[in-house]
Image 1 (cartoon, rainbow, N blue to C red):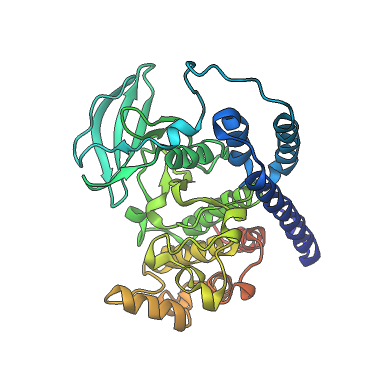
Image 2: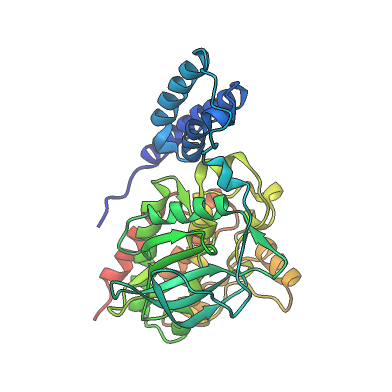
Length: 371
């Protein structure tokens, strides 16, 4: 069991994170102000920009920016006007069409077996790679009139592929030709959605612990998920839970710098996702809130807040007090009531301030349960 960190330790960590964020903001300002023609320094600029949303790479950013300034200051050689321009910015300007719903053209290296899932944003196909590995192919699902900027898709795929944790669905490879795709770990056990209402208290707590460990890992790499829900928690054949769909995952840096509007799933959305002016911006505690809503649903079989229409659901999230799980299921220990209510507190300052504290409390309850 992890040792609970003191409030001072948590404050120091996030002060250090904020300091790195400020340094990256300054580097971004200097990069924007630098007279570095993209047709000449495109590779260097793209390399720096790819790291600007990762606080842990602030030293790399500053070193590369210094080197770029030195290059810009040198007299430039006249380029060969007949030579083709090759830089990363070319891909950014290309718009990639996504295949129509239900249609999947051949993808080199994969034998598509069947479609196993479909939603508003993507289709999932089961496929076999040439080496025999069965994977899940994720294809963005858009209307026939929509297009996708490959650079945006690649940034999200790259973010996900770098996450290495036993409770995160693995990404094997990804690409944009002949359409955007991600090949990821095939989870034979399906999603948590199918298990809601059938889980024991112990099973629910174990899943909660595993998800808390995932979020501890992600948050301390500067990443928040923002769309934690039963559909995004999958199981392998050993009944191990894994978090998937990091497409909404954003760096804490980016969330602190921009207000990009609502993204996520309404029933599991936090107050700050719905009304930033009243509850502040999205941050790591948003994930804690969402995990709390999933814990409540696993324990009770009911969504925490749900109205007859979207407006009613939003109103309940923003104004109502959460129902203690034991009010729905009397055999739930009061300590679990306290844990869940704290996780889903309307105000971020009243929630768990670090997901490791939530995990420790869940572990404590779990250790006192009989087999």
